[in-house]
Length: 592
Figure 1 (tube, one colour):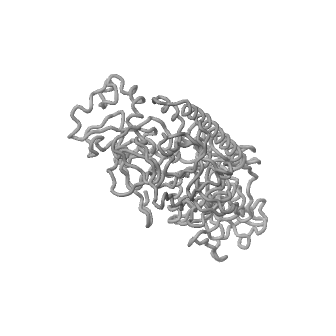
Figure 2 (cartoon, rainbow, N blue to C red; figure 1 turned 180 degrees about the vertical axis):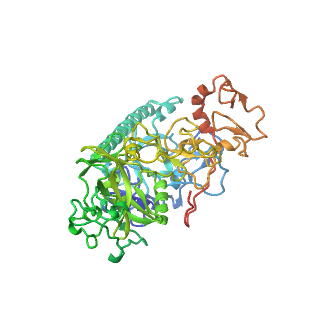
Figure 3 (cartoon, one colour; figure 1 turned 90 degrees about the vertical axis):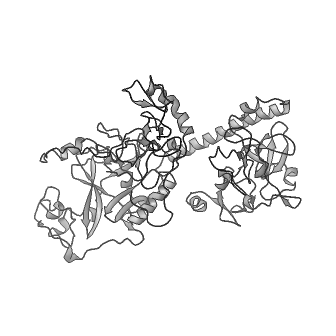
């Protein structure tokens, strides 16, 4: 997976000759201790023997927990100095060898990184990992193995070869933590000052590079492959009709504008495109915009707060054909797999439109300029499905008169995937706040529906499942995970639930489980997700001054809403991990 991800980057890679691992060639990516053989080949640090006197050496673990900074019975990593209390990791003491999450994820020290180093009987000392090419020649000639890397000690300005088992990362507040200790000599105090100063220098350099990268990326849209027509993927087929099956309209060549928007062309009314060999108007037919690619003149632009967009450079009238939505045509199974991979990689931009019940157009990797059209709750364009030469295609049409220089938008009519709700930033007066939530009619919709017969207003069914627009933990909006329990309106941020990806399948929020024993709850706090079962509800909730609603001990009964903000972070850290249903690794995923 790591190699596949790296191969997608438009940068030069250096690959290990002993395993599939690969890195970008910069010092910030290559694992310290890797032996560079050529510009493209290396032996990565995973293949070091780390032997001393013929025996494998174990790491020197710290005597405190990396999470709570206290001593005691510790669980030590077999690959790095990290140590933890099992209870801090909310796990039992494992049997046999164990590696921390960073080591299991393949995280390695890299060059130009400030670390703490343990050498002999000396205390943990701040140092910087150096590239072997940049250290003095006498240091390069010292004996070392694959996986060893030179470090430069602050304060004493000495060099030494060390491995991953004797270093752990320096963080920004380490100086303040160490200076409070006793028995600090002048050299060590100098080392702390130099390490803090160097750490800030490297941090400023990284931020400067990131700013330049963002500025460079902001000047042009993200890369994609431009295609002129839909490309089927896998088993998907594009239907081609026989000439005898194509409908013939009633227009005549002598008409002023045959098959035009103002005409009474039957094909246009049924959203069928005329075929040049079948239409009576022949070459004069004006209902062949898809086949002839008669697109409006448009331009990709950078918008304020909504990424890239598409602007028309010519005036458009209501009903005019703007462009065709083009991309890869995939089936439902491939669509689900792409959505799953996007969620795993935290990708939030999707370019999928439903073509038929079992086919989807994905303009993400391949497409045309139509992929940049943004969503709006008050759009000036709409999508229409037309039959062109026997197959269904999607076109973008103007909903109302549009002046030149106006950004083009249409309503995505998005259905939430994976219990998630995405914020809308269209800025319209009738903006619903979220994609997939039906807004009130905008200007163009009003004009389109002005002549429609008014229907009797239907009453909203009482049992319809609706959710709140703000996180129940922190009270803020954004991308939310919604509870699937009937009549539960609560929604949450993934971060507030200590989750990294949306839960799979049906999911119920922690409000319905006891905060003490995780059994079904019978008493609920009205101001936070804490709840209690019958065995633990005694004395856990009190009546507040706000409409006599129940509140837990995290809130002041006289002012429960005022106490909520101050206790949110405390509840989030104390909250037990949320139990979720894991997504199956094989087989077709269930539709949510």
